[in-house]
Length: 193
Image 1 (tube, rainbow, N blue to C red):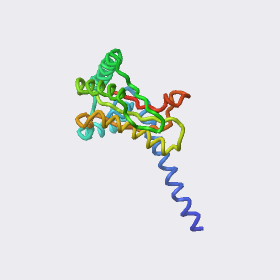
Image 2 (image 1 turned 45 degrees about the horizontal axis):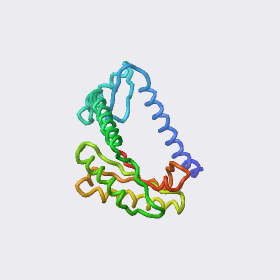
Image 3 (image 1 turned 90 degrees about the horizontal axis):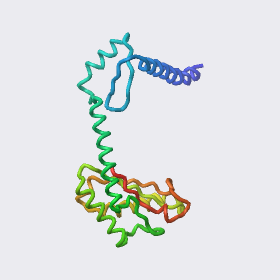
Image 4 (image 1 turned 90 degrees about the vertical axis):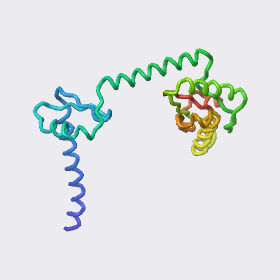
């Protein structure tokens, strides 16, 4: 009999925790006031729950509160980045560089393209870069992840150490093909943010 009680105790604890979570969600689903906490979500607070609102106001110094103007600033930065990128591509800049089969080597034509990106990043110091490496589906998943990472890292290296702190490398391997042709999937994409 004691064994059954011990096995049921964790189940009861989990179920009671779920009930508490459901009750707390219901509290925030209707009302008129909006609270944004660390830009991670918007919660609605009911007027009759004034005690909860006071508790949030007392802890206000512990949170980073953002108003709508700051959100608009982020939006305007994205629009400005998009406008600069459009000018870059209109002048012949490429946002995707392709690689040979089973290779992360950079060829002279690719180096010329990378020079354009170096100039672009130097003239736009507020813009960061994410290099997304890709591979075709030939080879194992692990091998393709490593190969696509090596491709992105070789471009990061070619961009130089002075821009290194503004560049992030992400490896997708064979997970995001854009074509049924192998040569179109062996690529590194430049994502400016």
